[in-house]
Image 1 (cartoon, rainbow, N blue to C red):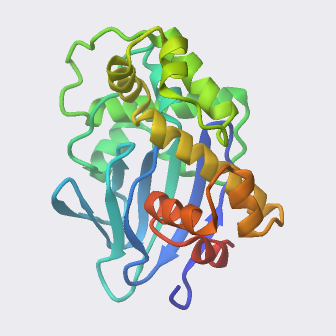
Image 2: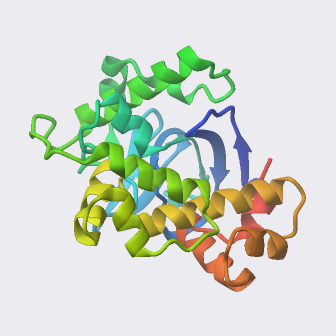
Length: 265
């Protein structure tokens, strides 16, 4: 990490993580995560490659990264950049949309004027407590932003077997270290594996396999923050070994577990 680079965790809630970070150079290699990542540039110029294009996000602008979409991140100038980020579980957005498939945001940069019109900037007040009422307001605000930023907000969604999909999701989330077979997931979903894969992604923004891997990484991060070694945390989370975990960690977050731990404020 460059001198002065840092990550500061904000106050989150179930399904919501918030943080503030400052970086120089190119801190993030290409990676993807299974949450929406919705950021606000505070200072400097943030640049990133996303869907075959290079984007620039200026102070006051927002960037929206869809779940399971590969991207990187770097500073657009030598001065570096600072930003605040909200990571939100796609299932929460989907609940706010009453079970509809997730909106697809094609243009990831939202200018400051649109943000002001949508009245969503409070979601980046990362030190504000999130009680039950505030959590609902935050999720509703983010869902409104995503719908307005999506390429086709009027498109009629295809129906989903939502209740059964939630059962699959809960099974994977509750036992991330367990390797459930596809046959077992088909029985839970009441769908064949191809329909399950297609509908799971439409409902939650990622595949069942990637969803499970990210729940393993969530478990690992909690353990490391609690003082566990990377090796022990990796094995407890169901990774084959520490090397396997490190590869998955970098694919998910764009930096190694050691650099992540070093940058924590």
